[in-house]
Image: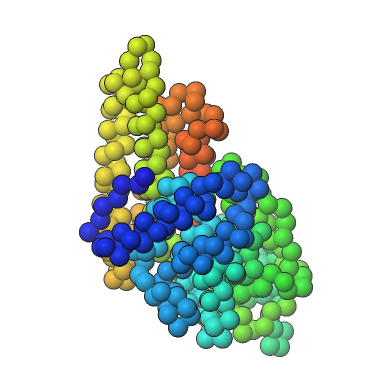
Length: 379
């Protein structure tokens, strides 16, 4: 069980965390292997999570939500990640829903937010392309205006929730001559003619996340599906990045904690040369190093979440957070696997899943190299 204390959390948070844990024990953990083998989180699970109030906790009451703050998102991230869920549910609550809430028209919000809250509508955000990752200037998917519609052509890849998605927030070039400043964010419903999904991609880790290729072939969508304003997509994306990177920081920290807890339990139980493995100085020093980093990490997250609640978490602070926590997670997971010896390389042990799922967090949401570049620009 995740041991987490914070001055940000009160009795309401404790009750919410207990509810989340009961839901995970009842609905997720018994199906973990099922979801991994299927390469997707079943839609009935999404609906159950919605019915239990575990999706989009910051959704305002006018759309049926509880109108809570981001601390409740943080609890969901911590508990789902500690339970070894891939980053699919968190995408809906922390990333896709806020774009609609903050920048969508009243009509789009009334149409889609209640069903996203209920888990009946699943959303994805399509930025990455075969030839474009963090560099939005390189995006080649186009949206050409034709009367009161846009016609979208292009391809996206590595899209989380790609197979499940009913709605795709699609990054398009509406004015290629303006480079990144000619970018727009357009909502594409998955049942539009010309939209298709490619394969569910075969990944190193996060097997239950349906990460997919998406294709747009003369997909006509109403101009009313533009999120925010035409050619303002880059500004909108940048404005939401602090929360996205904070969310990744939280999941990285929780996964690192689980890796540490698994290593402590294993080394306390396993013997070598007539001694418990934890009794060797090298083991204790390795675990002590991870524990110290976890202590610092949790304290830093409290600071970052508190700043985010006040709207003060800057882009470079969020980038620094994402960089530090994901790099720390990788070091912690790798060291924890090493302490398992040969058992750590066996998929039957939780540490193997934790380790392979960790690797991508240093890449998605902006690579560690990009995070350092963003921090460096502010010097």
